[in-house]
Length: 210
Image (cartoon, rainbow, N blue to C red):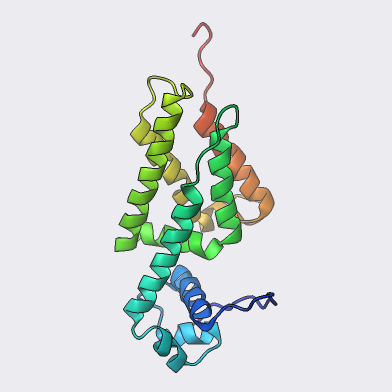
């Protein structure tokens, strides 16, 4: 089984063994999927023994739950912060949060994308939680008068989710049409700018006289 190599780095505070194991599991799950990842592969990526993995996480199910809980807390925590009051641009604000998440936690973004398309229970939980957060934001925008009366708030929320999850899920194809990887700073900014414009203004101008 091919394992995912962790980049070597020196932190001021080294992560504990459970954190290293959880991160290694997340990295492997994101690349290979849960079913194709063994505890032995996780141990190899974390640089610990199989016994150490089993000491902290008795079963693979326990390890999966630890990863899922971590991902859910990180994602919802990042997305559920209050949106700024006008005249700040709330679309750009949430777009920056998504871009930062992809840039700083690419393995989390990949895992979320996989979970949402492979039918796992976590995918449904994440999608529903992000729908709740997103819909509340669009309703607040509508209350502030920032949204036109003909905007379908449910589909506005779904479309924003599809744009983010779709770009990550189709990254292998997206990368073929970009001069550098989608997750590079320049391309993430380019994607955010285009997505913000689409959500904020639409791609087509209004006909003359409207």
